Image (cartoon, rainbow, N blue to C red):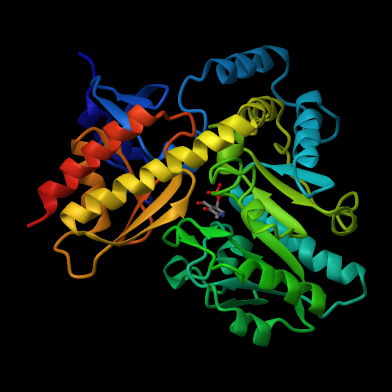
Length: 404
Ligand SMILES: Cc1ncc(COP(=O)(O)O)c(C=O)c1O
């Protein structure tokens, strides 16, 4: 007998640590923007495994590049060069502010590298006391200790202390607080141009430029965490391009591999020079298969016509949510840029963002939350206008059923 969703879930619950709370479906395959569970039920994917599956599921060029590379070479480690990683780093350098790339395996690992680099760079300049890393309330930078300490949300720290020293937190968007805090001991300011997990909060206009001016003036590095919003998600190659503010260091992951695990740190020449041989590393970083996948993602997503499409579809998505809100009056605000959107639920409603996510799933659409009161949408970037309307109609049906 074929096993259904519940059979798989029971098996999973017997063997996994209980740190996740997955929706009660076991997914088996995907086609384009559609996912199919083990019972054959189809879902329109409006979250892409949290902004990862940028080319959707089963994208022919992506599948082909991965299959080809699997047959050629799976792993080398960093004691040899490999061609896909070199081609990928060349692409990242060609299309960004950066001169140098460090490849790793996840967002948290890219941020660990960024924090280490910031401190080491100050140390190399003889500024041994310049170790402080400033981050912002509502941020999310990852789960390993450095990235976790950088994550200014107490709920993620609870019970895991002591946290590494040298981190301090400022209100997101508050330039005056940053002006008062950035000092002679500040190694870096680490900031998401749009906070993903924190509620899809777009940095207020002038905030990133203000941080750039202050960090330059006071000798600290500016690090952009674009793990969630880089690689075409906002309709530009990188989110920093919207503001025209150039950081010293940027971290990437999620959408970069189109579904394969990969992270990257990008840096200017002068800063990257501190990562001398032996200072940092990782066995799997620059894995040829992940890099071959990322090459296809970048070559597809970074075409100007693809990016303009993302911008137009993002407008359509937010317009649709706003229209829904005109009729149902459930959101305080619809935020976002390109194909990442957050709909902030009104206070006092008798349902939460996860209730909306569950109701959407019942209507055949997969979404996610960003905190308790924000519905988050981040569909594959290859979604088309018609599919977006199907998703919006389903979200409308789901929300209508929850409204008293
Ligand atoms: C902005 C940001 N930084 C870092 C991370 C951590 O990435 P990973 O889960 O790949 O370690 C995330 C994950 O959600 C993120 O959104």
